[in-house]
Length: 300
Image (cartoon, rainbow, N blue to C red):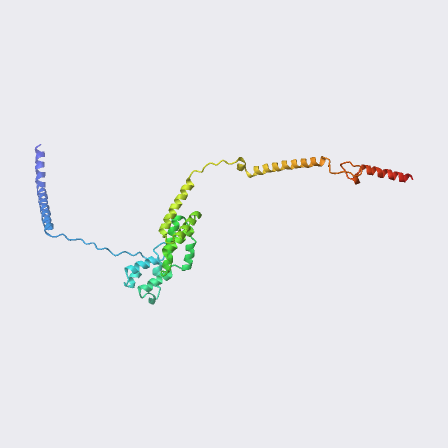
């Protein structure tokens, strides 16, 4: 027991400086926190101002499925106006970047020439007439059709921004002319004739309502109608029945004809013997008289 108490006193003597050092550090930390709070309260707080960063323009590569050359041109024109050519070149990638790399310096001395060059190489190859032909031949379903029409019309106006055609009127007329349902197409065309000022959005809403009514009527239960049994027969059974009826009529007619032939004709009257059933030339009595005259002549 005496040895154990002695060891404890030694351990406490060794750890005592460490404990004192820890307490001193804690005191210093509390003092620093207090002084920091005082400084923050005395000094005015800084106001943070967030400046909107410049809109990032997506790189143009000329690959299908990426940003189109028209969208790229609009973004660059809106953001840059008078910025140096290097800005445009820095936003090119892939085939578009290679195209500009091998072009002479005279073709890329200002932003407008570079953008015109990109439109010439990667723009719409079809003419306005060809695009209008594609526009007129569309035949999608109602919802898809309206979206496809708008996308096609955007392409047309991008190729020729100076077109004088009324965008909304063209959309409305083509929508009415090319919907797939015949009844709906006739109804929409009637509405455009009766109301020439009707808008594309209003006509599309009317088409959706009419299409909903058509679907509701098609889903109604059909009424049962009594159909005669002969209508439900197959074509083969019907033909056989008709043949039997015709055969029976033919047989009946033959019997009537035979009956009429077997009856004596009362209209035939012999002027020699005055008996019915034969004429004078066929009269048996006349033949009998001829035989008698021949026999008498032979005996002479």
